[in-house]
Structure formats: structure tokens, C-alpha cells
Amino acid sequence: MKLIKNFFKQTNLWAGIVPIQLLGLYALYFIIADSAPSWWWIATIIGYVCLIMIGVSAGYHRLICHKGYRVHPWLRKIMLYFGVLAGQESPIFWATVHRGYHHLHADKDQDPHSPQHGFFHSYIGWMFTLEDNLSPRYTIDLLRDPYCAFIHRHYHKILWVTYGIVALINVDLCLYLLILPAFIGLHTFGINTSFNHYRSIGYRNYNTPDNSVNSPWLFFLIFGEAWHNNHHGRPGDANYSRRWWELDPTYYFIKLVRID
Image (tube, rainbow, N blue to C red; front, top):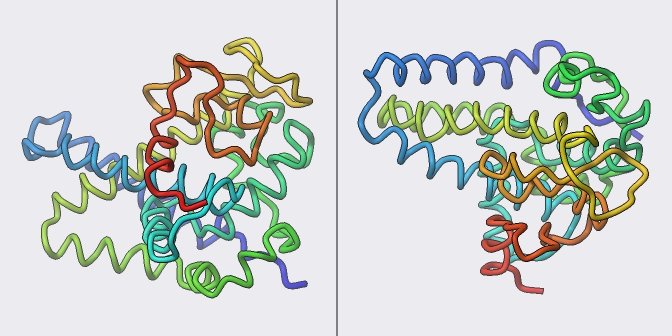
């Protein structure tokens, strides 16, 4: 089988992740310098909800990767499009790493972003060192999906054409509705993949063979993704809450849109 193209290598990384980080710092500079538009925080909250909560958490993660629920095809396309704009690469690549390597080999040598290789590696360093041998066998279903395959082939074009169109309308709108939420989103998922695999900083509802924990103190950054041990305990469950106080805003959205 043909290997999955690794977007976290060489020129591809410079075409996506790195520019978004630089532009995110650029947006933060104007906020710190008090020269950002007064509405920047409203745009950033909306962008974070759409791109990260709906696009990545509900779309890439729970819908596409783990198939925890179903939605209407038109909504599925919108959610995956939001995921693209979050700047975390294509849904096929994202699901291949997460489904085929992280969950299958959690906190073992084959886990690409386990803290056992060091905190920095788990947080962001793995993106620069991931090998070019990702197997397609873990995401055959997505490779056969015309929409997912199209996004995978044209990921960077979709990302930057959209950013460019919005920037032509209003540069600040692009910076604070798209760029800054994507910048923050990458770091919140870095926090999730790193901190939530240290047993000393959270608690566990499931005795899983990995080091996953639930971290209430991270809730205000990553919402329901903070209940990471719950997710590893039942990966196919779209609801990450197990106790009444384990709130999962992403699942509240899922409850409104799921059709199964």
C-alpha cells in the first residue's frame, strides 16, 4: 500500500504549522501592544469554538477518527472544513496518527507523542521528528472517502486560500477569527497530549495500560478533552464525561447534531 504523506516533515511543516505559529505570535503582539481591534476576543472565542471544538474535537477526533456518532453529510463536510482551518493537517493524517499509533501503542515506543520520550517531544517536538512511514491500513475507510481524500491531497491549498480570502475582506478578521484560534488550538492539543499522560497530575476512572489521566485543571483550556483517561477507557464513546461534574461542552454540541 502507498504510505500516508507525512505533513509534519520537511517543506510541508513550513507550509502549514510554522507559518501559523509565526502569524499567531504576530496577532498576540498587537494584543499586548493594545493595538488590536476591540472585538478581537469575540472573534477569537468564535473561532476557537468553530475550529477547535467543532472542527478538531468534534469533527476530526470524535466523528472521523473514532466514529463515535453520525451527522448529516453536509454538516460532516462543514465540520471537517473547520478542522482544516484549525491548521492541524488533513483529517486522514490526523486520524492515522491518533487512531493507528497513539491509541494502539499509547505510551509505548510506537506512540509518536508520548511524554516517555520527553515533555518537549510530546508537546510539539514530535511534529519535527515523525518518520515518513505512516501506514494507510489504519485509515482505509477515510482513504476511500472522496471528501477526505480530496482534503488530504489539497490540504494546504484549502487552508491558505481560505485564509487569503478572509484577509482580503479584513486582515484583522483573518488574524483573530482564524489564525489566533489555530495558534491557540495547536498548543491546547499539545497540552492534552503531554500533560494528560503524566499520572501525577490527574486522576483515573479507568485502569488503562497507558498513563492517561483526567485533568480538571486543564478544563478551561481544552474543555471535554481534559477527561483524557475517560477517552482512553472508552475511545468510541463521543461523550467524555463519566461523573456529573465532568463537563463536556463538545458533547453538548454533538447531542444537538447527531443522527444515530
